[in-house]
Length: 638
Image (cartoon, rainbow, N blue to C red; front, side, top):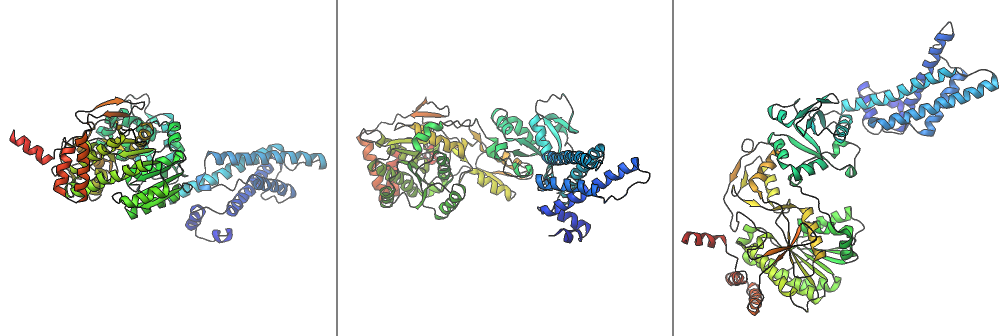
């Protein structure tokens, strides 16, 4: 759009045109030229009112054009017109100041040369300084005016009224950035003091309040709270009850990411809604990067279940260690395709293969081993939905046990260096087929790990529920909340261990690097969390009040589901490792000829699709496996 076409528009459209998108530099240059023309004329007018009997309203003499030309030349040299006007800030003020000072100095130099040559001056020296002051004020005022107009035109009347948690210098800087932001998604109306003791009552003319004051009244209609990522991490680790108080007051909580993670020009675009994973954060994991790099660098690594939530994150966690090739294996076509698109976009330089295969098909897996010769295997492929597996036990055993056996056998045959088996806390004193099938797989892994002829290091990792993973309770609750309820919880006392996907996968990589073979690594899952508390937190995070806006309904325990999960079997004990979050479970399981026969028999019964006999053999192999229905019958008989 040309400058002439722009000025022909209506005033409102003109203003919108000036601030809507990136205005061409030619237009900004033209406006700056007009501004300095007015500034120079104003300067000559002021001087004429003092030195001449009649004011000079318009000076088009040579001295004016020389000064005007000097300023234009400085514009072209410093390109002060090249910035984005609607983002005017401190840097723009400095740029305009530099431009003006250089112009004034140049005018004074030329003025002196002109005087030495012709015996007269273009303008008195004080006039050059006055010109600089007027020009700088008008140039910067123009930019501030355009920025303000942009804010008014694009202002959102529904912008959230927000309180900033904290009164430190960083918190104040965040508030100033939000106030100055052009997007205006948030309107800062005050600060929250965490200590409860107020040394002052206002910052930036905005009130400072305590959590107690918030409990009694809303402050300036505030509906949300903004908190820095670092402070959120500290509070969720050390003072979770403080965050719970804020949620109970029905505030929406937003977080600002670490400064190094910002990727936009607007701070509002970086502010994200706090999710459940943020509230359950724990001390960040410190990986032994040098040791892990020595293990995984330049290796061909096979990841089964690579399209799942755990497998896909293991793949991403491996990338910084620069493996030679990653083999992403999964039977699910669409999720694997989606994962490959993600890899192409986010990690275009990584060498990987996308492989459709089922771990039950040993011949297919054998071909993959022969072709790619993996040196490390992360086995995450499994059926894991407890009620679904209760209804389809032979499928659970076929995938979780036979699938694992196929990979273990082929790893031994191909001299794979490390085999990391991803197990579950449901394998401990299992009450369902899913857990028992995983425990059977653990036993088979250990049966080969104990053999002196085995060169492969077999490592088992065992952890609880992963927040946000496929099939976990979090996506289920989220969908129910989006539909405005009811949110269904099986039992008011049911608890589970939880950790984030990142944390789980980092610990899997760490355990895979430290294992010598045969260990079952148990992760520190922290304290068990009541599912009802998770449900209430998710409802509050969505801006609703539990049991008022969205009802919570108890549906009863599902088939195979128990109230409390365990990470260690009764006869197991643990030993510490060099990593504070990883322990070694010492199992009392004794391998004898009878147990090896049971393993063989289980394989045969599963291969014959004999469900009843498969479960009978499984109970002998895993004697601690007592289905909930049998437990209930035993209790009733007592």
